[in-house]
Length: 54
Image (cartoon, rainbow, N blue to C red; front, side):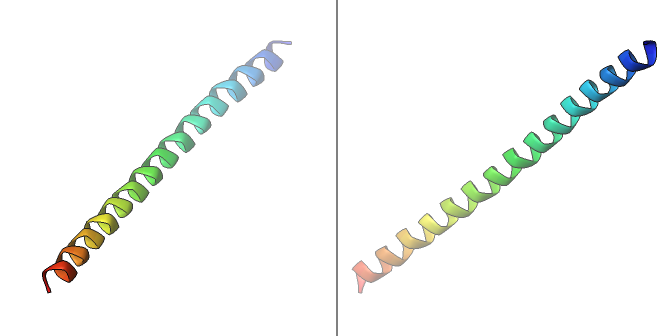
């Protein structure tokens, strides 16, 4: 019976750590996409300014 409890505790802790690690990776990925969107918006604004000046 004790082994079963330790197994369940281990699975619970491992599952929580796994989910936490995957969430951190997802947050990092979203941040990268937001940076790319900001960069592309800035490029678009610059090209529009250049087109308006000519």
